[in-house]
Image (tube, rainbow, N blue to C red; front, side, top):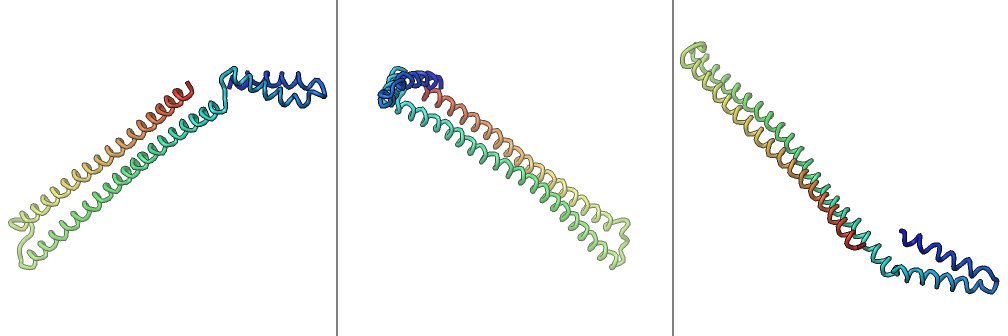
Length: 186
């Protein structure tokens, strides 16, 4: 940018000097072109260097946009893992309800069968069978709880990993773009 500001007075100075006479009007355009060309040649600016700089800038912007797109894809995967974690919790609760329902149905059927045959349900074999059914249901519920918690933990860890990778990709993209830009403009 400072180079452009350096060229501006040289271009205007050449135009003002040539514009002093009516005959110099045609020479104004030539004087300006020569003045700007001479000033640009003196400072090392050319059309190819301007185009190269523009291409470098666009490359930096494209690199950063690519890194941001990759980071956004990883963030989306993290959001999906969060949703899976919630879904796993709902599945776990549904399984618990199903286990309880099955246990109550099994105990109810045994109680009805025992009562129909005239067995007292408050003690003896019928009471032991009932205790065993509750113990099995409790073990199934405990197993279901641990499985659900384990699966939720895996989804939580997966989401955290995706978020960490997204930050790393974004940081690396910015650094690569800046380094690439600095080397292009150097």
